[in-house]
Amino acid sequence: MSALRYLRPRVLGEALDALGQDGDTRVVAGGTDLLVASRHGKVTLGTLVDVTAIPELRVLREDGDGTLRIGAATTHAAVAESPLVHRRAPLLAQASSWVGSVQVRNLATLGGNTANASVAADTLPALAALRAHFAVSGPRGERRLSVGEFFQGPGQTVLAADEILVAILIPRQTPHGASFLKIGRRRAAAISRLSAAVMANPETGLARIAVGAVFPRPQRLLEAEEVVHRGFGDPQLEEAGRAVEEVVRQASGGRASMAYKLPVVRALVVRALREARDAFLAERGKGQQ
Ligand SMILES: Cc1cc2nc3c(=O)[nH]c(=O)nc-3n(C[C@H](O)[C@H](O)[C@H](O)COP(=O)(O)OP(=O)(O)OC[C@H]3O[C@@H](n4cnc5c(N)ncnc54)[C@H](O)[C@@H]3O)c2cc1C
Image (cartoon, rainbow, N blue to C red; front, side, top):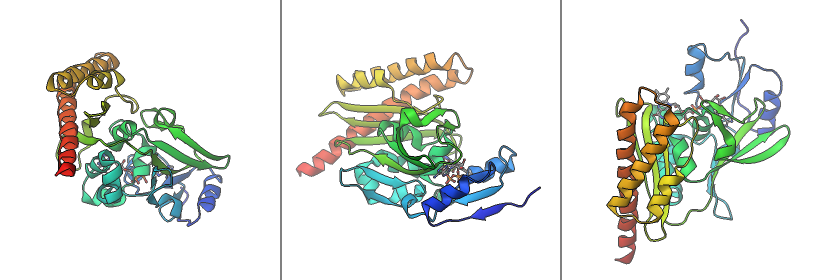
């Protein structure tokens, strides 16, 4: 067996050159998914290219057009604690704060969560609701992909082996309240069994709804959003919950775990919608005092 090689380039071009060299070369950031997969024999590691020292992957700033740019190697702890993310994308700050434990969040990155593309990854429904884009660099140049283009299925993205996810881009959002809720087997360090990511503004009719650990890849629930566009009263929120349940039922093809999941997903979405609506109203109330 050949020895593991470890590189930590400080320049994006050097990392891309290293990736182009042989098939066993892998990008690593926090290593919290990759090293676990390697221990379970699911991946073979030859050369590891650690991308956490590359400046473009460490930025966390607002671009001139209001886009929130989060370097792929930004840790969940940094995302969850950033005042900028709290202001511009509170849903993502909440989702990152739910990942694993303090130790995991200090190492694990937003880019790793995204590139790993687990159906249970906490930030993916939040990124779908926020209509995020992904900035990718490779030997053939740069590309910018939407959620629908980037994620292909469970554990699959369009990233080629010689490409690097550089940043997650979140377009400017209109004012809204946000709520991310998750159900795991335990409160701490649990992989989601279900999650709901919701944004709401009852004044403009904005409603974005995504659920995690249900679909093969992150997606918004447009049917349920339509229901809420018509009104944010409790009856409409209950109706939206039923619409989500119906979409999940159809997508599940009668899997056994669904007997538990269907009523829970409905209740979780309704609760998240209420929380997001009430968070918006509370914030607006503060502004008027
Ligand atoms: C104890 C424990 C608890 C956990 N709890 C949760 C949880 O509650 N919620 C949750 O969502 N996840 C959880 N995870 C999973 C994991 O921590 C996250 O998915 C994390 O965000 C992965 O980030 P990372 O930087 O560690 O990725 P890595 O392990 O470094 O990489 C993961 C994958 O992405 C690729 N990759 C990483 N960065 C890039 C990049 N910039 N460009 C291209 N490819 C890249 C790697 O090659 C690898 O295939 C948990 C893991 C552990 C060990």
